[in-house]
Length: 487
Image (cartoon, rainbow, N blue to C red; front, side, top):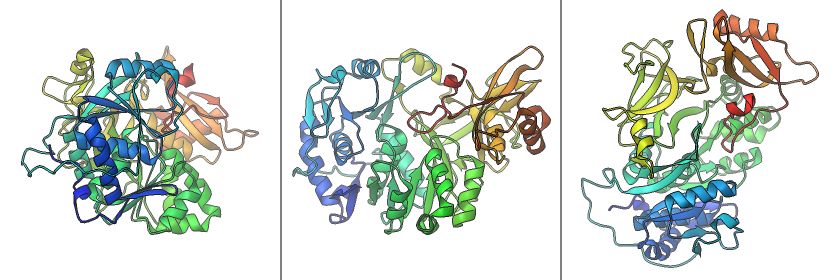
């Protein structure tokens, strides 16, 4: 088993590896701390990590991976029932946490080990290089729990191979090197914040500065202090776009960044445009999910088309299929199909769920993502929504909610927008718009918004029903929870 982090044993000992607020570790200090911990973990199959945005979480996960043990990151905001399910399902032998962390009763019986981020120990000797590892290593690296539409969360078993191949493919797409300093404020129990946002810089031998809690002031401060990259979700970029007009330091910071990346949900075109107009920098979007890590991205040296998630990453096969599973063979930028992917970036199974694992794959090994998209002739992919919640069949057309949402957000009277479908006796489904008005005292009315959408897209894509809300329900990553709208 080869280390996923060669820089821990390299010549970068004095280089900054991690910084969380005013606490930091160099590569030498991180190697010492993970070396001290890894030896204590090697006898376990899996360990849980109380994934707070602190140094200790990063040390715990890296140590587990160095020991060849699968880490199970736990969301500290999870309820007792969900935590109980995850622990019963994954059966970790130990819980790793920051000293002093207050833990809920659901995990009180699990043996606890407080992490010393400044401990001193020696890393396991690095084995001789092998052509079969680490990129071909199928041993579990992480078990990340992901919620579906029904039932309790499922544990996606992510192999070391997937972590290595995804991070190396992103290094190729984003020209990511050891000289890069990444800034973000993402939670560490998701793929975005943990795998891309912490393990990514460490695999490259670069540095990560975690904001602890996202703020536009924090982004400006760190990017203006020689950081080169920022990762965020659309909610963060929306707040950035709203702030730029009155914050010259933020404009300077984004204008000087080498790479701005958005993920976890679609970034509205309107926010793309506002950020580009103010800073001259284009935000790069990528597309992935827990089970696949990363599938596509706009390349750093490619065309940054707003509203697209770029092209497949090296090593990733991607196709669109019709409802009957037949592949779409001609890409025209209009035909909607479900995304299926195949490659070394895929998870191996849902833990203890052979039925769900089998249902997730086709007979020839393609993973059914459940995401709907269109693809241009040159390979660029544009996500239009989830098959379960965002594909609307109206009047004989297959319509993606995402493009209607983007059109609505271009209206000056709309601050936030979500689009769903509901049964209609004539059309099959009618398009429903859920709007947070820019001015609650004077919200835009249905006819105005319907004409606005029809003029930008097509008449059959106009909303037929409108609801005005004070806010849209969102999860921790900023994704709109559409089922909660109907509830």
